Length: 448
Image (tube, rainbow, N blue to C red; front, top):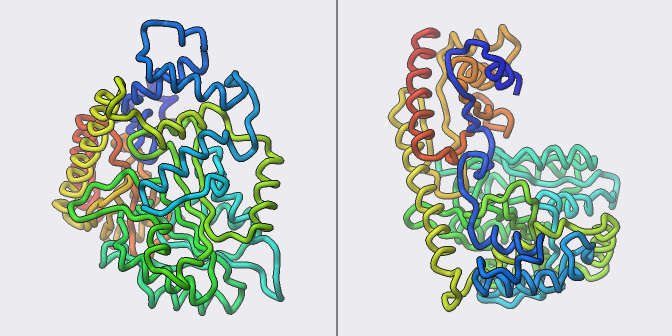
């Protein structure tokens, strides 16, 4: 932000603008909102427009349903776990997705998926024995998890993803982490991020079954971060939910305690600022679930606008409705473009000397590995910075491109990475990659 302010004041820089490749904010990167979503919100926020001839009848009908669900006005409180009509539609969505029924009362709408994740992590704050509770989280990891564990005084038990196998979750590594973590913590839960952030992998069903077997062996509660489930690009890759996996596996695995999370911030929607998400609770003890809902309801309710978007994600226009064709065209356009951009990013990095980048099978980020010259590592240490932070600052100062150093997410000791978004629109992304290629060549030459 400081550099942006300097640019606005006319200060001379070697670049004309900041390219924010550090965030997963689609609309900030130029993606247009979905027309159907905006039309329905317009009518919900200004009900007088429901009488207008400017909107299709399915838009107006949906707005009326949502207004009925929130007491007739978008500014009203809803139940703490969200509007019943929306929760029912989410349950229907999950049933269609997985082929197994979902109980709407096991669905809780949240102020973004992050809020739901934090609510569930907070359940483990109680100490059952002599050791504090611990939660297994992947490395690299989304920064929400270590931050929340630190906030709640929970132990962080890291397990490393296997970069050489496209960031897979290895059973032997899970076992190692559990045994090591159990020395100091009562390990009670396991976090899995699929599709991966920052790593962009989509787990195979076989890999997921191994994870479930591990969780069942040790009685672990599984938190499945599935917010990027709409973002799957690679040929042969397919999103499968952990709910479906445990149900397919049958007893005793279908008794695994599970919370899964979804968000309106990702997918083709990209509605980050409207803050909406949901979680489904599977096999949770009824008394625990009741207390969880009680704690959530004490915070009043998730915002109604986010709930409205959730409804439209879970129940988009039907092929028989007038808004369907445009909705489908816009959705496909976003996802097809993201697929093209993901390939562009990976292909460019893998042509650059010193870079290795696994394919972006899903989500919104690439996480390339960089082999930095020894002189650069020494210079970074002299500046009391980790080498990837040193590289990221140099890149920002010389090109205006903002990335996130891999150390922010955790990485195997001795390796260096960074996370970059694939969200900049195509022309800007191409420009960004050209600048990065030029910078990397100069950086390598400077520190050779």
